[in-house]
Length: 258
Ligand SMILES: Cc1cc2nc3c(=O)[nH]c(=O)nc-3n(C[C@H](O)[C@H](O)[C@H](O)COP(=O)(O)O)c2cc1C
Ligand code: SF4
Ligand code: SF4
Image 1 (spheres, protein in one colour):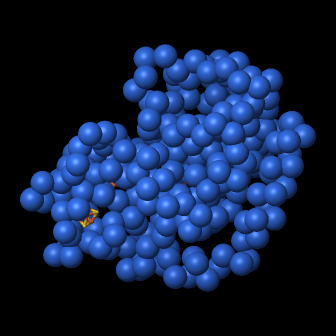
Image 2 (cartoon, rainbow, N blue to C red):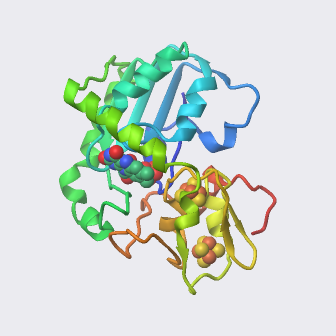
């Protein structure tokens, strides 16, 4: 089994690790000229962004082809998935591929402009993540087929959210973040950025390929990156995933010490 995943704060990687198999981080393969893969089972795990997929996951699906006996997609989300799973199945089909199974999994919502991370952490017990993930794992082991469904209201809402998002997700979101004096220029934000959008010299600089994943904001060890509209000072990293695992997954600047 090969699982392709995208993660900023570790939820998707934690899920991928629990399912197992050969785990491949999408930022590490997105620039490869050949994206053809072959395995008995192929999976995709992504965080739901604005009721849909992150830009890089869409880009991956536009180019990737695979041969597999069974394929699945899981979208992790924090509050409402909208029609994200309908979207991923439709999108794959548009590019000549398909997912036999598409399911979403409720986890911590890392969208800081919307949610206080302390509240999110307090709500963890009521999300029943382990039970829901066990059910999904059993489904995958049994090669269950599942087409995602969403009513017309969700589909319409998803279209509205996505069109708004296209306006704001222009790749320059990071340039609006504020760096506090706590910054030690350690360079970790540059290493955990899945888009290779950050350079650290005497200052932290954001280019214009930001995915808006908020990884740098959450993972900075000094809590030195802030958003004007963040709902809490508290940050989130999935406790089942280490900082080094996120660096290994997302570092696009191999060989760079900073
Ligand atoms: C830009 C952005 C948009 C998001 N949009 C949604 C959303 O529409 N619905 C939702 O329930 N969660 C949303 N989330 C929360 C993430 O989907 C959720 O926290 C996910 O599990 C994060 O996975 P990761 O830790 O692997 O990055 C959003 C998060 C970000 C950063
Ligand atoms: S991770 Fe934080 S402390 Fe390190 S360089 Fe980036 S902003 Fe500064
Ligand atoms: S700059 Fe920050 S928010 Fe933008 S893609 Fe990189 S880690 Fe994510």
